[in-house]
Amino acid sequence: MEISYKNFKVGTCAGQKVVDGETMPLVPQPPEQNKSDTESLVSALKQEKK
Image (tube, rainbow, N blue to C red; front, side, top):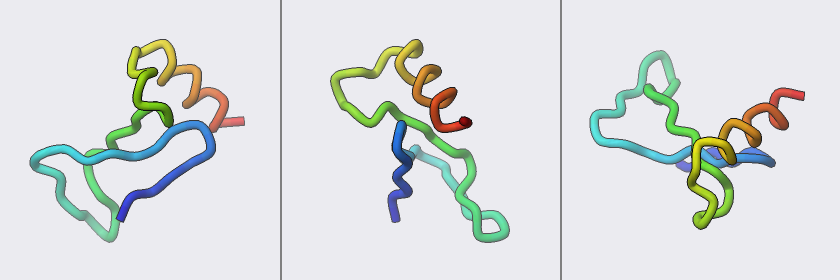
């Protein structure tokens, strides 16, 4: 299942595990595929925090 938030989406990676119902590690990604730079991701995370 993919979790989506307003300013970012959660992806997957090799080796993820479910611990107490939570997928670890959390892999946040920018909502737009063409905006994959770190600055865009940090900005999205800050907006989600508000």
